[in-house]
Image 1 (cartoon, rainbow, N blue to C red):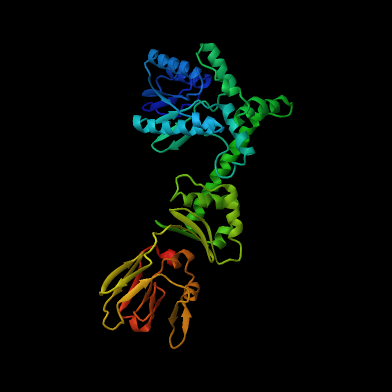
Image 2 (cartoon, helix red, strand yellow):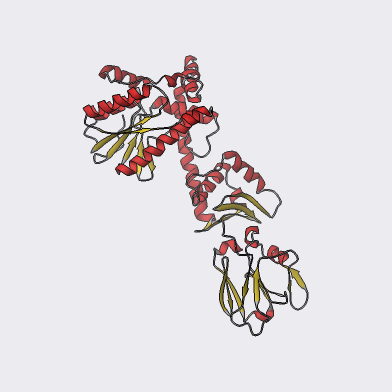
Length: 426
């Protein structure tokens, strides 16, 4: 068993009462009792089997006999069962949400689980054949940093046979969960059926998947480094905006592009909601001969192809559709600051609004230009066009358009400043 914690750590161990977690608890109590400062047990009652009540009573008494604090949490999964959905994923999410809550409540240092070598091999197999191979490790890691604590799996180098031998040698009590034998669950099918068939063949050994896991982990680390290097050199970042040239981005290998976007999107999302397939669709879209494309948008951020750039931007609050300026001074319209020194020389009051179809501005020495063409020529991103203020006088003459245009007659009277990220507007 690998000791990857400190003597002053408060360890919290998740115990199901199965053989794996009971052996780990026994070893912590009898072999490694000097390697930590405090030990606490967490047990989850899933509320789906009659045996769960006995398991809860057993682990409570066991902890009492050994002077260990224990906390029990009951899940309510009946609605999941009634809907005919697999409970395994829902149960796992609920367990870990409670574990995280308890880690913060207890101010503990290490959350420990009893995942072992066979679990690692099973996970590698599962992720390969479900296509979850691009952006994260193929299997579990011995130690992961979480928010405010570490998740540690000290048995990852121990096989199931090693654990069974320890249990029989030391007579460790445990409960067998019959649902672990039910092959209707994918992971059980891998464990009970598929991997044993592989190992039964003279030339095959499922444990070789660990070598693939190690190589893949090293590759992921290299891809992360390449992504970090790309971001530091090619990405312009502000608190509200990220931007990179499509030319440099498209030169990166596909896996590096995915990792770059993962890292940038994490400015807005703790868990990146984009699948590998969705990324691949984006990569096709940005090569199309279209000036601007909205690739994805949420309530908080959006990603767009804008001419020769790829940008990720915070979604702006919608600007008012119209407002009037009746007095000189400083006025705000969305993310713009409009300063009017005087209204005496203008046909006031002035009106500030968003662009409309057919809007035109006077171009000296003669002629006019559509506001839409003005924005296209300046390569204003599509989402910015919908927020840029248009200032017109009482006669309907357009005096200013954002920071792009001011009529010659008002250049000393009206100034407009953009208060958002500079990269957003151009």
